[in-house]
Length: 236
Length: 238
Image (tube, rainbow over all chains, first blue to last red):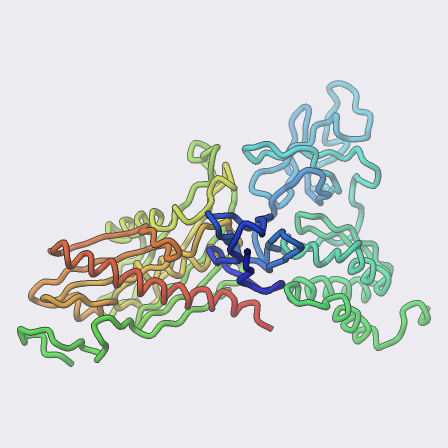
């Protein structure tokens, strides 16, 4: 009979025993050694049925296919752009992967120039960690005026919340347009500069409190406190 | 204080038992801009470690396509010792210790998860007494875990020794300098399975003495490991 040695939502350190017995199965961040399940990194334990999973608390961005990321054009060749996506190697975006019609031999800086921020999707990650991105899906493309902030990528799932509940709350309360990249970059633009600043503060607040439970309620209180308890829509 | 001229070594200079370690303290997240950082203090020795990475590695020929490259740097700051000012920058001793630190940490990290990148570990000793390489390894292991790396286990390290016929755990500077010769044995291990990742020795030991040292080391490392884990969890306490 298998036995769980830690509780759900416990914080564990690498090398810690999580469970004994073959009844439990190792998921991300956990490995099996004979009968034991062992944590392979710092994280919060998540037990769902027989699966034991770790939610990471820290770490740099690890690109995965189909992630939506925010990046910045760093360099280009005759046929592709190199984009900084907060990963140790720049991602490659081929000219075939953008929506624009680009004639043969055109200067690529006329389409996306140096320093341009873009919203893109990861199309491929090779074994040797080179990343390809593209902007063909709807909603992807250039990011216009606004501001970019950088958070720890491990905290991004909390920023988004379950089915986008957290980010929806911030958007609603602060009346900002927000795009979140899985790689830790966030683009935002608000009508009211005060509220835009509040949105930024809220995002940093989430980053700081990310490992705590009941965060959406806390953030709601935080926002209401800053807005003077008044409902944004009524005020308008 | 024990008179060092006295022949028989019967008591330790600071009144500890032979198998007892100096008081320890550990803290995680001490350097804000690093990906992971930690402080480890044992007695008067204080080590700080900062970890950066995985990040890009240039020149390109240093890159390894199959795994990340681990780079460690051990450094004692200018007035960290009790004696003269230490000349800053790398020297023969610090280069050697950087290398053995790298080898002590190497088996614990899953470097295959980050091909083509580099993991930089910087260890600074702000105050030194003895057992600096071990304190450095303990701090670095915590910093690596804090940075969120995929690891097999947390490495712990302790310096043991022999003075006359007594095996001691965690030697002080005075014991290291014992006039009739002593053996200094730093040990690093992954305590969960007892895998040794560092074992050095300067001085003569019999087979039995070495066996006793390894037994005591595994006990001490388990104790240190507990302190390291508690410190890591402390960072996320409400």
